[in-house]
Amino acid sequence: FGEATYVRRRYVKAGQESRYPLDKFMGFDKYKHYSVLAVRNILEVSSVATYRNTALAVNCLSGFNISHAQIGNLVKTAGQKIKEQQEADSRYDAQTAKKQVPVLYLEGDG
Image (cartoon, rainbow, N blue to C red; front, side):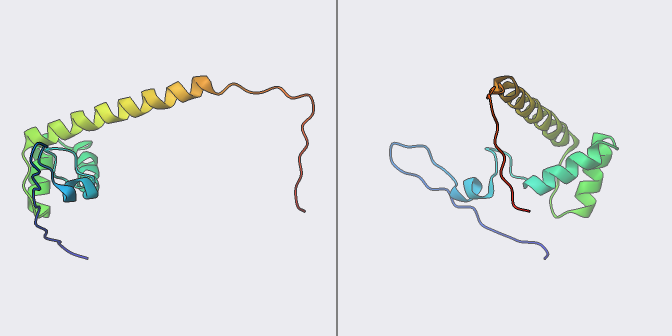
C-alpha cells in the first residue's frame, strides 16, 4: 500500500538493441511509462471531464504529472487497442461452425 519507487536499468548488448527488462516485466509499452491501472483511471476520469481538467485532477491527486496532450494520446491509443480487440474477436465468431451429429450422448452426476 502506498507509493513504490523503482530504478530502471538499460541493458546494452553489442550488435543488438538496448532494452529495459523491467518495462517488459511490468507490461509497459515502449515510450509509455504509465501502469495499466493508472491509464484505466485516467481514461475513466477523461470520459466525464475535459482533457485539461483530467490532467489537473491527475497532477493534484497522483505522484506524477501528465499534460492534457498526453491524455489525448492515451485516449486515442486505448481506442485503437479496443478496436483491434473487437476486430480480432469478430474473426473468431465467423469461424465457429456447429458440427451436426446424428446422436448426442450426455452424462452427468446427480
